[in-house]
Image 1 (cartoon, one colour):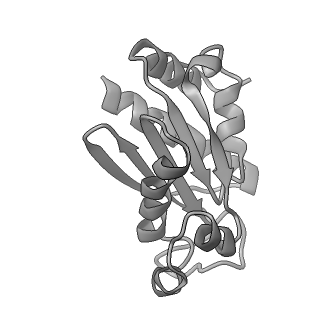
Image 2 (cartoon, helix red, strand yellow):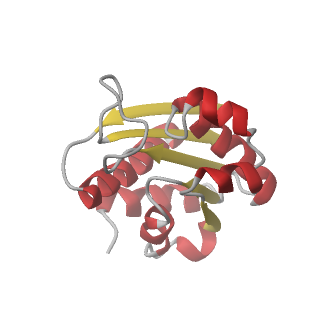
Length: 158
């Protein structure tokens, strides 16, 4: 069952007759899965793309490899490109991109530790970057990222 904030977010999207799609790296499809368990999912969810490996960001979303190498796959810049380019693949009113570090072995650093999550949400007339560092096991980080995306969308729709 999705969290209460995900359900409320889905209801708000439905009440405005909007749709949503996801480009997921760090959450590896879990964001789409949580949103699909809402009663409103049939009216709002267009789909999602899991692009965990950087080659999919290049091959499917056409983000230049040099851009990813310059900014790292887990960055605000790459996450924004995920969200922006997703609309060309999955037409929707709201596009959410998510990257981050749920386990060691990525581009973590002192300023970008494991637990770092980058979200970018494109909505009609809005482009919203979000960065947060969460603590916990990988699943806890992923679930917190999903709730953060839902809460951000919900606040923007009010």
